[in-house]
Picture 1 (cartoon, one colour):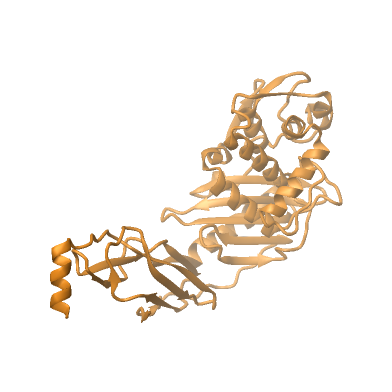
Picture 2 (cartoon, rainbow, N blue to C red; picture 1 turned 180 degrees about the vertical axis):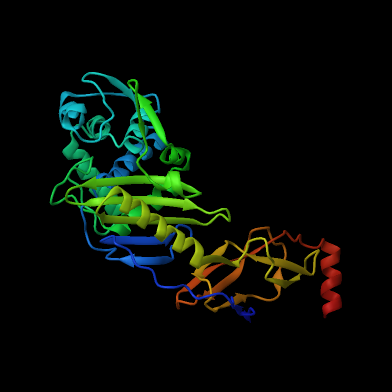
Length: 374
């Protein structure tokens, strides 16, 4: 087994180091959606009242059911009297303005939940999928555990205040990440600025959709207990995606300004560097009895690292593989391993794979090769 130490990647940027940032939010969490790097954390693992931001879990379960084929976008659920009384127009809360007995397509309910923040739409989905809102809330809690959300319990589908209906800022960010990655076919809904149903047009309450380039989701929340909150994402022109959660702010204006400040901090003070690239050859490994003498080897995956601009980033990668390799070799075949030590001390391992196929020599060519070697 041969070990090869790649040249350490040492990158030094001569701009200012990431400065400290503060926020008026009682809870905040800012992460890179692709690398998971945490750029800001304020009481991110403390359970809090998430208000309507918890509707993201209602949406997750609905999108999961649609993707699995259990329902189609044109499947209709009926609006019950309970859904109308608890979430309809007369409640004074966020509503889709549904009517008792009305049949509503699931794609419209998904839009009603995420653009209009309709409490009635959430209850219709809960009853349609689980029979009762209580049973659906139990499914929400079960799904949270499966997704690794450690501080989330649900008692309803809407986020209406309840002492046991809780999520953490980190959990909301991770749930947002799952929505983006697991159901990309529905993600454009979260950036729609308005939706009209039953002749009533309502606008999306996410302030970043109107003030920050690249903002494309997700969900606001507000109750007297929770204050004003927002789970948001933005995608920069370079392709970086950030996820932000803030909660416990005192007004809509404060929510808008604090969220924008934190997003701009993440965009301007951090960047992503590609450490390993599936398109960049790492080594040529000798091949025995092959039509080619060597095979080009590449990393099996891209490895991207987020770091503060202005900080030196040192990374080392070690390759382990047998040498020489015996032909034949198939493109994509595992040839060894790459062990990378990141600046935070974490160790990342991935396969080293063949970037091309190498056929075995013919019978007489192999005999000649053996005779020549002997």
